[in-house]
Length: 367
Ligand code: F6R
Image (cartoon, rainbow, N blue to C red):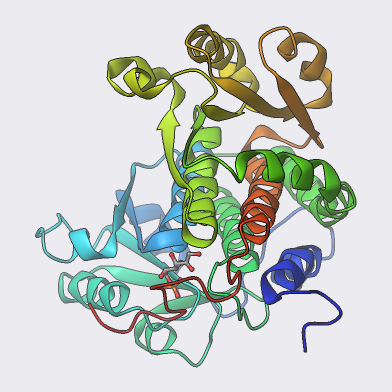
């Protein structure tokens, strides 16, 4: 049942290339230049009338929504707000019929997410669900569904569902951009072409898992560590940090790199591991300055970046890991993979039950 892997989590990490392909299948037209979303009820007229997008979910699905929200904002140039379902549902959010509410849920059964969906519908919004379970309560009640085709996810720690949710968001963002004319046909085709390369790029990273394993064994003896990043890198480290906490039980915090000096820098002392995700070229230099700030306080820094940046970064960090290059917007679909592996191998090194971490359930159907 685990297909030769020691744990469901590792199997599911390795299923990501297939999950990417399956989630894209049938959603790109024959020319390879256009996204099609068969069965979508959201009309072109409705898409044109939208004034805002709310992205609502819990846990890892929320983290996927952070990347997804940025993708929509960049591609469609429409204001996007992200919130966790347990906050959104109780704070009388400003929802109008011109709001598109996107709920994200692997299981489709998360109680708070379902309640948020109902709150949105009661206020006249069109609710689109991104879910992995087409027969779920959320899929049934939503006005529209974009199914992630990740296949069943057994491990409590979500991996392939998260990355498939990213793919679904990229497709939706491109689709909305086509309708609203915010991206040229060539730009859309360019993103689609890059998306087609993602599965192979993930495979190449999986083939180099040993480097991550060695680093995971180093951090396994620590009780606290930090992740830093800017922009989409910040969104991805939030997922990396959650993954690490839930299965390795190492306390970690993900910080927007520029925010550290506003308080948290006080926690950096000799030998504290800091993992810096530095893939977003427009803010790379800024992230490097933040890396220098933590280095000066004794942090032990691992940078995850593109090959071309490694020589330069190695002047200011202790170790570096290179990931393949894609468009900045798509990079989360690659950069999260070493972070998943890091959590997995750290949990393994600590002798934890990787697939069934303490205190957690796969599907949270109570508030
Ligand atoms: C983390 C994890 C949880 C879920 C969250 C939402 O690895 O699995 O954070 O992501 O409970 O679950 P779904 O997506 O089923 O609504």
